[in-house]
Image (cartoon, rainbow, N blue to C red; front, side, top):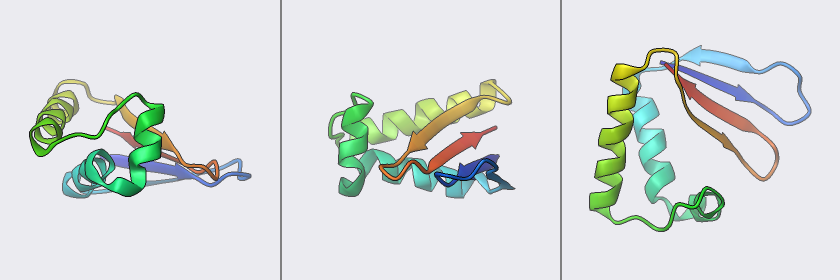
Amino acid sequence: MKMYSRKQGHKKGAESSIPNVLAFTFIRNFFSDKSHEKVRKEYFINNLNSKQVNQGMKDIKWLFKEYKGLDVITMENEDGDITKFIL
């Protein structure tokens, strides 16, 4: 899996290969951490309980297996920094 990140104001970003475990941990934290609550609301994702987070992770893992090269998740924070996970 690859992670692509680009800081606001920079034309070129950085791409790096990362283990799936790190990507899944990052995505799980996005679903459950209170610090991402505002960003989740922008994507119409309410606060999730643990069962909903687990179902979301199962669905994402299925996407990772079935669709190679898929841009699974793209997030942009308030500063304009972009983070993407690509298979």
